[in-house]
Image 1 (spheres, rainbow, N blue to C red):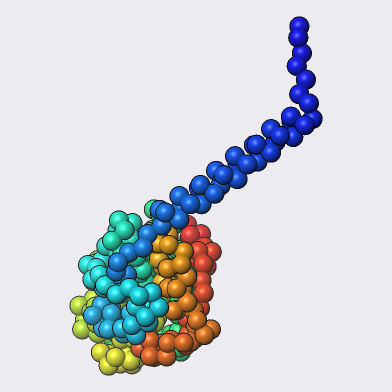
Image 2 (image 1 turned 180 degrees about the horizontal axis):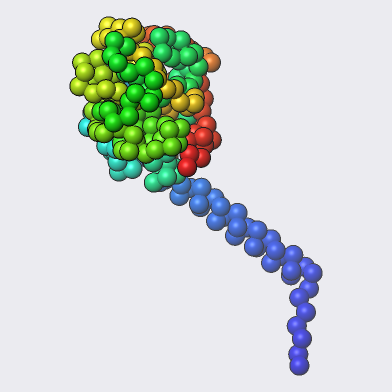
Length: 300
């Protein structure tokens, strides 16, 4: 049998060749990624319709102005019909930047791991809202009504917000149901969706429903807008704290564009755009990541 022995020098050259090939492949992969990243002609923005969508979009006008100045791209606002429509727009590449509810974000992230949460607002203290980058789900009833304890709501009519709303559907179905040890459909005689936190709260005030689950922050906003009084409501249950709505962008956007977008929110320690923060009743923007929403993933 003939045995061939490779000389050390030849083995060294083969090793160098393998390293060179690997380096070339890495460069080609990086180049391919750079080519594949997207540079849209417009920056398309959307947000979930939590209360008065037209008002919320108008409040974000200082953001749109800052984004256009920073990126050189005009901002196009996409008006969604539901929480799910915003998620679908992100997944289809029809929306580049969005403000999502936490549960809607988790749905989007599960469908496309490239979607990135990068910023959120630290809220000011208000009638039903504590200061900080978190909020709670509230079960509210009309203060002048007959309901003074949870047990008095058995068999009554309940309003939820949207199937993809965190505080207006997910938390009630999970955390509240666990608290009373009964599914919502077994505790209340009727359970329906209103489409927004404003509509749920006003349905309580107007007597169309007996109770509703709403966001502490959005109920505070409703009161501050003069649509209702804090004295109109009694809170019968409050959830644990949850992280606030994240601002997200599509992962396919080019890194330089994503950096410019992030800087608009988080520059000057998140307090650079005073007009926007005033409109949003916020103290500042804070950086966030996917891990901040793990508490919601851990719900049974």
